Amino acid sequence: FIWKMVIQKYIPTNTKRRPGIPILGVKFIVAHDTGNLDSTALQNVDYYIKSANEVEASAHAFVDDRNVIECIPATEKAYHVRRVVLEDNQAFGVDAIDYALGIELCYFTDLERSKIAYNAYVEYIRGLCVEYQINPATGIVGHYKLDPTRRTDPINAFKRIGKTWDDFIADVSHETSQTKEQQI
Image 1 (tube, rainbow, N blue to C red):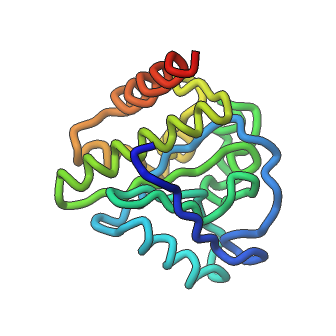
Image 2: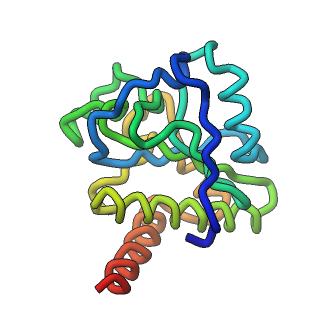
């Protein structure tokens, strides 16, 4: 990773945002964006910590131009896709909460900051794909695909920096194939 380390700043367990329930496995990744222009990873995680008992909504990690902060371990469930939607079951045969990691992209008014955050997001997700043996072309899905009547993320952030969903998958895939070649 470009980042020397991933920061772990966890939401307290046994709260609405982090129930502390083990994830049943990692079969796919759900790509999100925060929907909060100019908010950092740290600001989002701090908000989740302060509001831990207010709502069942969370993610595993936030990525910005300076940090990758994991706020729920990949071994636990995060509430990042509603159970009442059927698209995750139709596409993957399981609920996203039980089998997917939710990763949030922070984006900014400053285009350069957004591009740096995007590159870190691509790199972090690429690392997850390698770690969990996920094919980016079939194992990454946008939140907008799983909850199309309510969500448009991460397309919000991608549009700001001139990227499409296909660009994102190609960027993650390119990085993933280079990593595999380097390991051989």
